[in-house]
Length: 207
Length: 208
Image (cartoon, rainbow over all chains, first blue to last red; front, side, top):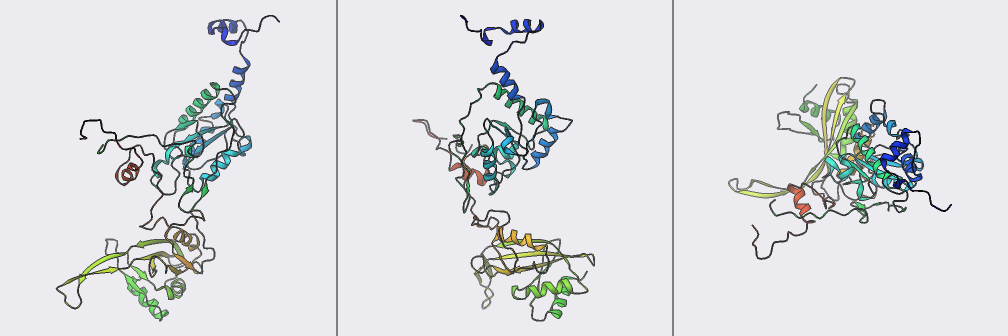
């Protein structure tokens, strides 16, 4: 072979559409791989609170998460690609969630579903609720709502699919998230500073 | 259903050594309750359960109340025209709501009080009398720190075992994890402000 094969980017979209009309499907191995990966995201069968009810509703016939290839809720973290943190994470539960995340194989993704998983939600001022799972686990997509409707979960899943399609396979460095320990007054450490730092907020006095 | 005073007299007749008093509820509900001394509370509870006229066989709810130390201003007993201040020591209180499935009446509210809030916080467990008290007494132990003597399995139930505080007590100081609060207000604002960088005042310009 004197010349390398032309890459998929060298062909314009209109040329590809023309070829498709003639029965020739032109793609690249990477695109094919992304297409397959983004449409076979297997979530972990794992619910924490009322958001899990909406997650279950999204998997049933009316909303039908199977249209996006994510209907295979796996009961084992070893077989799951996606952790949907659906509900309030209490401080007592947080080490278990981090341990489940560590048990999932790479590449893996995390969706924080609902106000509680994002920030603690209505329980934020309590002493026993974790103020956002992103303090311990890297979150890919945040879905606000209390709880989010199934459509919102589906949109979050589509956002995640976009993210999977836009990134090479080994996007994240594999490694375990440290599991927080139960301490006398709070979890130790109260957050993972490598993952989460408080945003710098400058407020005027009296504002 | 008998009035609390009648129930008190009935208990006094059945358990003569128990000093049971009526705690009046001055509110509109007028739900008065019985106060039992911890030393005889188990006999009182057994009597309430087994007395044929009461038959309070079901304990629906156990809860705790934290009464902190407070200053009471009252008339001096020696010179009534003078007011004196007195420090009333605080205590922990456990409240049981009792019903009768057999007779279809209730609730009868039974209370017990500890000596203080620090080192004498032991009360007799009523789980041997009403089995439904088991988890709820564990919850009172967890959140208020009341130790129930005679409880079959006294462990924390909501917080983890390593936890040292009692979050429902009024002097509980919660951990400071308010670094990020988008719309703080009130006491949360006070806590969140500690984490904000000091506002940089423009040079040569007085702050409003």
